[in-house]
Amino acid sequence: MKKPNQKKGKMPDSVSYAKWGYLFITPFFLVYLVFTLIPQFLTIYNSFFESYRDGLTQVGPNFVGLQNYITLFTPNTDGVVRILKYAGNTMIMWAAGAVPQFVIAMLLAIFFTSYRLNIRGQGFFKTVIYMPNLIMAAAFSMLFYTLFTRGGPIQAYLVSTGAINATFDFFSVRVTVRGMIALMNFLMWFGNTTIVLMAGIMGIDQCLFESATLDGANSVQVFFRVTMPLLMPIFVYCFITAMIGGIQMFDVPQVLTNGKGNPDELSRTLVMYLNGYLTNKNYGMAGAISVVIFLLTGILGFFVYRMLSAPYKESGRLHRERKGNVL
Image 1 (cartoon, rainbow, N blue to C red):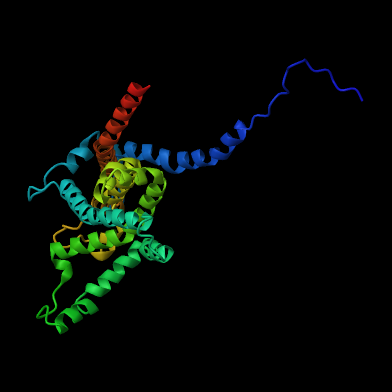
Image 2 (image 1 turned 180 degrees about the vertical axis):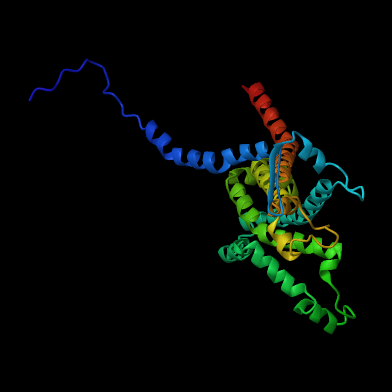
């Protein structure tokens, strides 16, 4: 059978599979458009309107411009700007849990990935430290509430050992309430951070550690001169995502304090403040708070990224300059 004529030297047309890639990612963009992007624009839109329910009467929506934002930053009768107070509460409780979270997670990640230590049973320890992350925050909060309430086992043990003379209300003291919230956030998330940092360290070429050791560097120098600079992109990712989660802190203090933010609203967070307006169906004020939280998250994320990644970018620039001089 005679083959069809083909021009000499011409390759047959190749098959393009690019359209299938676009087809596979289309569902994600559709879901993002319907459930994320459009609600975001509607939230911004509603923040410029007066829309709330007074009893059985629906007021609005009436366009009020920036009045909702002005109301947010207007001091109350006690001279306190509540949104700033709640933002401060949120950042204090997040920082109190995030600092030990990253310190412990980094130490564990270094220990588990060290070829010198060669720790046995790593799978068991990784499972144990990650397990608190699988527990629902509401269940975790109820557990802590049961443990530290007046009739709980913690206070009974402290009284029996003579550490305290009588039971007292843990939830009426600022330090103890904030400390419990920070402790719960630490326990729930340090395992996840450890796993991510371990993955980052394991992606670093082992020859770099061996070379540094042969050059006489001790463990501290290896960490700050080799491990940390190369791990910085992963660390920045973990830190920014943890900060975003901290700004959105809601379920733990909501359940632990029954939504009141006791004592004296010192454990009330930004999202708890937002949830109060959603409960009252004041969508205008809720939208304004959401926009403020969004802007706060973006600004803090930008500055944290620039601050933490600056040394990494500078070291990369110097490396490229040295490489250019060698060539």
